[in-house]
Length: 432
Image 1 (tube, rainbow, N blue to C red):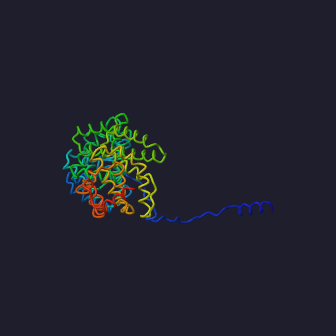
Image 2 (image 1 turned 90 degrees about the vertical axis):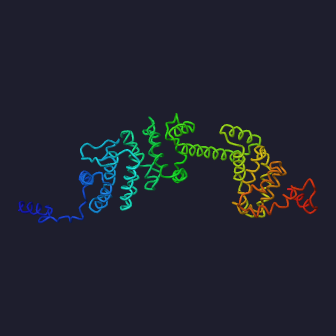
Image 3 (image 1 turned 45 degrees about the horizontal axis):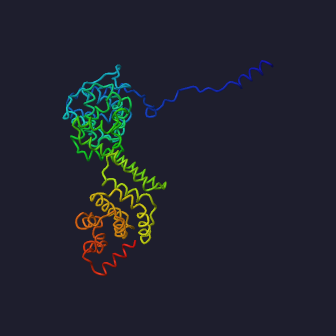
């Protein structure tokens, strides 16, 4: 009896097992194994068969995209096309995989050849749009590996990159890799940049290059191509001037100057908001003007922008003129300190015209501002007359000339004695 109970308990405790034929996973459900070596073998074989005929290379790459997984192996594909094989970290070729001689690094070192290779990449990415991002990432990576390449390989890559940038195949944001400390030290970044910009500027003018740099915020970072101890506008200018890239040198110098002026304007605005005295602001501004080699004309324009940016303006046209006059009365001594030359006065007048045109609620305030600054000895009658007769901007020309017509006529004939009505009108203006 005990044996039967024990036997029955054992039977109940036994878990059922699945027997019989196993279900096979369907082919399309299987996850493909990541195998770059097989992909590389196919690409290398195709390149070797195409040889140096780049049209044949382009056709091979075009047709292979239907059979080979470019999306998965984008990095391997671009490594092979540039370096001949897959790259290990640091930029050396992986030894355990086959390579090809038909690639950018093994090609002739001249612009014509690099332009032909750029066309291969252009056709490939145009055909397979999804490769665009992977290609940019590849170029960024290659720039980080520059120290691992030979000088000739770097030169070819620089020329190719310049052409690709000119053609719009890649964004100038890839240049961020050149600011990496490992590439910057020993002058590798700067040397590479010379070749790259020469190539780029052979295809496009400096305005186009500058526009591409500004678009991605690289226009103010070019000094970072040099180590910290050489990161000055003087060193940059000399280095790129000596390399025959004066336009790039002048562009970088101008950007540096713009950056300095923006910082200075911000500091003047901060001084105003803190309530610093006009005397202190003038002293500080003169010191900075001398230190940064800024002209009086540039400085008075900058001060005007600071003065007008330091206050919250009323949106009602009838109230803003009164607010502007009160504000400018306070800061007219500051403007006067930087209008010792006729050109500076004219610069200020043009800035006022531009500001009143761009800020529509100031359109009717133009004349009152000019009269106030005339009365405060900031603007002379010579400067006002020159502005009126020949030096004004097209912006709002008819409106502003009509506004100031009576005042200008009075200035012309004040000594001779104008009409009574005219004199009364101007006298009323001068009561501002």
